Amino acid sequence: MDFRFSDEEEKLRAEVRDFCEKEPPETFPCEIEDEGYGFGGWSRAFTKRLGEKGWLAIAWPKEYGGLGRTIMERYVAAEELAYHRAPQYGHLFGDAVGAGIVTYGTEEQKKEFLPQMARGDILWATGLSEPGAGSDMLNTATRAVKDGDDYVLNGQKIWPTGAHLADWCLILARTDPDAPKARGLSTFLIDMRSPGVVVNPIIDMAGAESFAEIFLEDVRVPKRLLLGQENRGLPLVFGCLEGDRFWGRCLRHAGSKKDLEELVEYINQSSYDGRRLKDDQVLRDTLAEIAIELEVSRMLNYKAAWLLNQGASISWESSVVKVFADELGQRIAHVGLQVLGPEAQIRDNSRWARLRKRFTFLYNFNRGLSLAGGTSEIQRNTIALRGLGLPRS
Ligand SMILES: Cc1cc2nc3c(=O)[nH]c(=O)nc-3n(C[C@H](O)[C@H](O)[C@H](O)COP(=O)(O)OP(=O)(O)OC[C@H]3O[C@@H](n4cnc5c(N)ncnc54)[C@H](O)[C@@H]3O)c2cc1C
Image 1 (tube, rainbow, N blue to C red):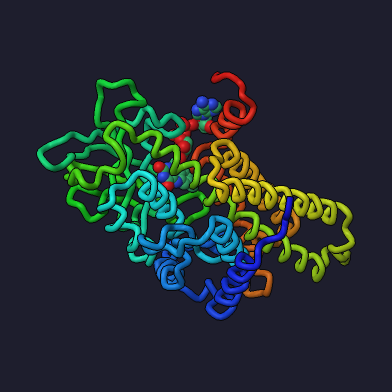
Image 2 (cartoon, helix red, strand yellow; image 1 turned 120 degrees about the horizontal axis):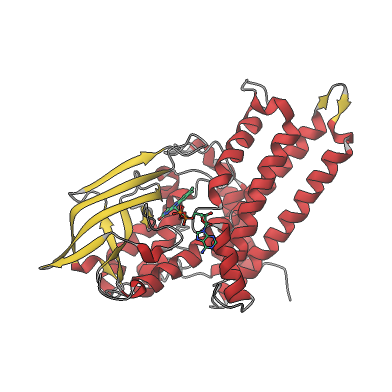
């Protein structure tokens, strides 16, 4: 077992670090205010800049606009960007859809979409959840009915992150209402400007407009935009989610590492009631505990990235990464507020104002992450079933 990164991986990491220092991510305009919660907000301008560098499609095939490099290189770049709190939200969903197009897309779809996505010209959302179908996607009620050369879609999606900002959306819809529930679903690539698509942003509990609801009213979608086989949409969606769970969460430890570093800096320089915080044994132990857990999170990431790099499935390892990262994020936010104490609530212009603001934001925002992409309960079910071989409950 060799825990070192290769020379190529280290070279790419250095390039990304150099880029983040010369073009600081926080200087790019952000469409979703993220307050620096750790893996960055949604920024079309930053996504476009990553596209110019080729870093949106590091591991995609060259013929479709990718760099044709390894998954491990892609991981290293993502980790370095996360450490610099780069806005990566804007392209994460494109990543998930891109993986679906690479695996299941027609040649025409690959040529049409992948190069544009690699350049950062188009941004994506994923519309899977519905008011009556979240954990149980088999309850998907949105309908797609064939009509000549089109499908006509009607239904409602809820919670798709960034759908009000996206150009395109992957939509799961029922194409055969008479088939067994798992057999009648298909996935479509929907242009968000299509007549009949209505999108309303929703404000999350942290105060950010991070997700939306979508209403589809007689939306005509040409047959060429069916992704994968008709009525075989579910395996495709599960495949996309497996990747999304890993890529959406593997970024967290690097951002959290920076949060921890800043808390340590704060403790080193602050006092409360005349006592230096750095001498407080409880605070020291608490931060040491977080440091241990961040190391665990990093190792879980490396294992999953390594498996992906070998072409292996991470059907339950992605759930392990997600549960641990999401719940650790909640613990770190809680610890941050403990460390900052009553001052966490103060908004002022002192040098610690941004740190305070971030932790109050994180405390609220991180609650949603253990729901997004499949709840922690569902991930634990997956781990019990696929990782431990326990029977379906
Ligand atoms: C911040 C955020 C971003 C999101 N982004 C997107 C997105 O981009 N696209 C998208 O399509 N959706 C998105 N979602 C929706 C998310 O995928 C769903 O909220 C999630 O899958 C849970 O579905 P639900 O809300 O319908 O809850 P339900 O499925 O109704 O679950 C309610 C509760 O019951 C528990 N539960 C349900 N079934 C089981 C079971 N079998 N065993 C044990 N416990 C169970 C759940 O864990 C949960 O605690 C997002 C949600 C959030 C909070």
